[in-house]
Length: 206
Image 1 (cartoon, helix red, strand yellow):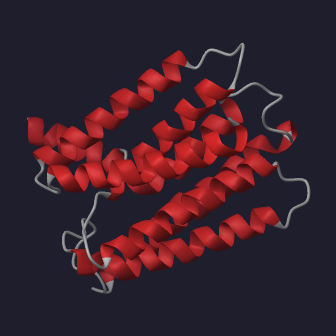
Image 2 (cartoon, rainbow, N blue to C red):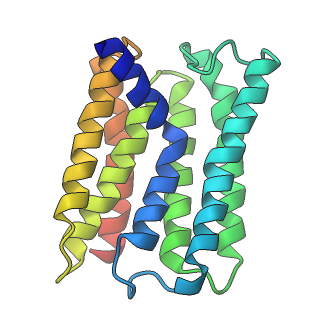
């Protein structure tokens, strides 16, 4: 039973979903004054989901079908380098496409570039060490939500912070229970995502 729950948590809250959750939080979980371009929010969210979740997932499925990767779980670090590199490139193109739109809110552009930097760092580290991409994703989500909770005044983000903490604990526990990572790999992934995202946001707007 616990293994099944862990597999569901790992599958549902996979790394590719985290950019959508982060951008969704920025667009719909913050005061209107924080993110400009309110009429375009649903379209922006749709484009982000398509470019950071749907298309990368389709690429991974094609790689699995053509046997470029042996499994979607990518259990060995050498299986991860090429897929992570391709997804990093797609994220970089997406961030740049947002950057050249003069009506796009700069905080969204900044966030997409930070997410891309996290993924590039993850890919680079993967050449030498298999850290948890799941934990990097939830660590980044927690880092951004926590940074905003400290930056914003007069707006309560207690429940989003608690939700992100619980999600981080659940994902970390699931990865350990499935023996997908060692504790050091789980902590390594979490610290990468959290420190880059929290640090970048707090240094720029804190």
